[in-house]
Image (cartoon, rainbow, N blue to C red; front, side):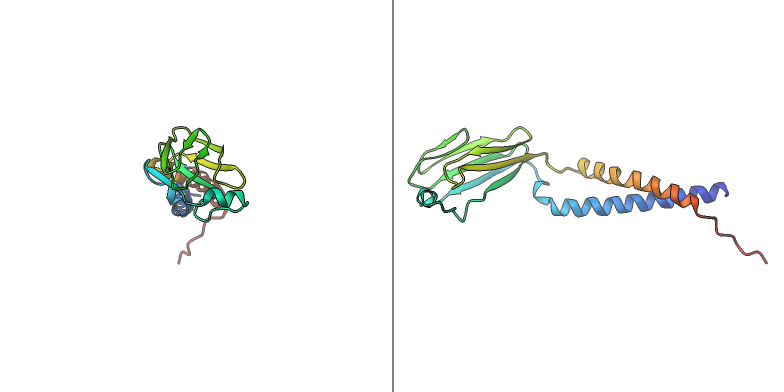
Length: 163
């Protein structure tokens, strides 16, 4: 094998690995795009009649079981119900609001009064940044490219017909 042949195969293999890594990473980015943003205020409204629904064992259709956040978000809970509610450390009087600054990466399971199961999940994660995306591409692309390069060196060199 000639030196230029080996360099060409390694270069093409690394390029294929990085293209595949970029494709996988960008598809993941598109699917997780909700966390590709800066910190903001996220609002949850507890509608009128929630306490009555919970007492009957029913779930309020406008309140999810859990929510995902980005580090630095502020979670604002507005209570439009006629009854006071609690979410973990927050006490939300009727027709009032309370907020919680989410400043640590963690999954929380807070006790709450506006869910029939009495728990509400909060998932706080790092925001997806350009740096995160580039790390993802390199973590997939570099090892795959090296592996392809090693396997490509096992293939015989194509001989040119000389007349």
